[in-house]
Length: 454
Image (cartoon, rainbow, N blue to C red):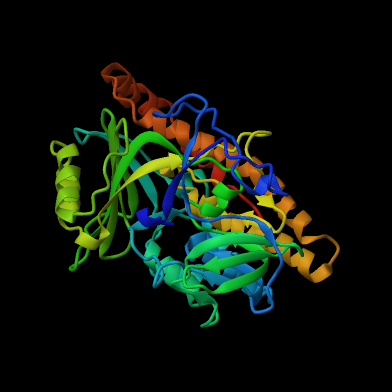
């Protein structure tokens, strides 16, 4: 969730907690064990919204809601739709004036499609996007190093690239018209004496929520208030785009990867007329934010100017509003060190809890998995009364952590290996590791995730 500079401040990690009755809800001095870029020993500088958290009495004129979801991204909408299917109403707060449909596309593997089927939107999306049959890996000079067919390795595998805009609009269409409140930006979060969470919006509206589900992205203010550190920049940035072929795109339905020295690229057909592409490159820092499409296009082309010509063609055929550059970040949820996914009746879902790099194609898939698991835990607590909401949220975190933590670490390591820039190591990769040692089955083993339907 984007943060405007006018609502940011710098906070040092030695803020006093003595006056707070529940310190776990506030800033705590926790730092990742992973190497940090910059910064001083003993000091963590955190960029946060001007949001506070304190214990107060609820006001009679506050709007009352059982469940409030912060963020109308993939995690937020999927959770709202999942709960809706079980007859549990939610209110989704979105700071934007409309759905955040910017960006390009994302690749969903079979675990993501199982979650979409459980939510009830899988078939609607399948009809709009191509099923990807396999993958090919090439060197920067165009030589094919290896190719695979997904069904040969796993008959149940299903891979499709999905436009983010279409996914969000499809999920939102399953909710009642008043389920999403746009232009609803959090200004303040407080806890009432009865355990509910009081949310004050920038327009002055106050909402009292029995349960708060934070799906507000990698820069989640709620996660920061729960003691989570900023996500870590992993040393790579990526250009992404969605090329448009009005007369029909010419590519086979497969993922194409191209490996260079400190740079890698890829492209995959999304539909009959659109092709998603990316270029990932090493960078010591994220660099300044650039939004000018002409500059982004020029920089992307410069990285692959001597590579296979189809990449340059894809960049040139990309509309201005679908080319972006992002820095890659993650957060490792170290056992016994990282805060839990929930505190009282507040819980984190998706990137707000576990941002990960896109090297395994599991960020969106895991957010969808989160929504299913959380929905089942909450529904049981709300309907059966056999367990408390707090215990249900704890059970969600306990069940998801063994799945999320290894995937986050694995995604980071895969990215680090693929971003090698040493010529000798790259030669070994291109001539021995990829052609002779890589097997697709183990690479995609993480997509084998089972859960019962809602």
